[in-house]
Length: 475
Image (cartoon, rainbow, N blue to C red; front, top):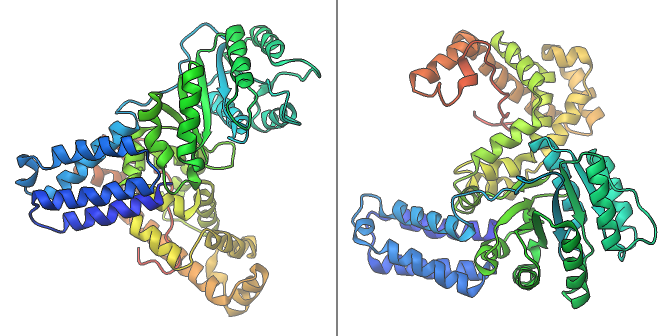
């Protein structure tokens, strides 16, 4: 997400950082480029004007131009203004502080991803907040809309209201409220009907359902790929329905980012969630600071750590930590790590979240290396026998040819994988020589990092598995 804007801004700021001193003219020229980049990213014109004026006013101040690193200072100002544009420092979460069942009403146009987002939110509430949720579809117009939510409910293990043919939205809302009370549900998610455009009938139905259910949250689901149209839809709904927040879907496919950058200023409503993929766990709480960091190429390590924590099983991490402590690392361990990388979003996702990895991500795409390389390596390991995976030393030329043929790859690919395994295995043995995980943790403690990473070297601590390098990597 934001790839085009991020690349344009990165080029501008690279030039600023490369200069020892900056003049007012340098800053104004850079801001003109930033203005064009924002407009090309489909950010609303009033938002662009306000942003450029605020940044320019702060950036041409004497304390910036006369500082030791004026380029870095300008980048910091832009980062702070981006955070403000996206909603400020605070993360606007859901308001669940009410007598159960707390009602969350999902509204939006047809095709915006309301039903899928409802299921994602049900899964999010169950797994992140430990809430018991009930989902109900009020969409009696779109064919099989109610059945779709029921199927998604089974997939995420969240209960859905039984379908009664012929019932109208207001009656379904009443029945859902009663069912939520009887089932002691903490949260009731109402998936309302969409329309192809904003009309009076749609708004009347929204108001009637809201009157029956008294929702704590009214979330507008909009497709970020529609750019300024998404902002206009949000503005129309804001004038008619008491919205409490916005959910932007398809953020993973939005290389421009105009909808996200304009939404808060135009509607006055916070962006609460972002849909980042088709999978039912691809929903993130929207954090303005993290998003600003991604736009400016500063990475998003916090989200990466959260994604790792949600993906990597604790018992797997502990098992690998014990093997690392003994200096052991076989091809089964490598396979586990490759699969964890895939489940965390692949190479591109990981590179985009790491600080300073924008150029590396671009190099990956230009070289033709993509997430298929992870699949290929997994296939190579899968073509080995259990004995070969546990003891790679058995792999002679004849076995390598058999493995390559079984995986549909070349012998050269098998050799690259084995080389990568050797480098990682060597690193594990080095950790053992340093005293295992506790010895390594002591080094971090010496640098004052023990408090930041308490699980690394403390009694019984375990290190989460690291990310393997690609074949041919020097590290």
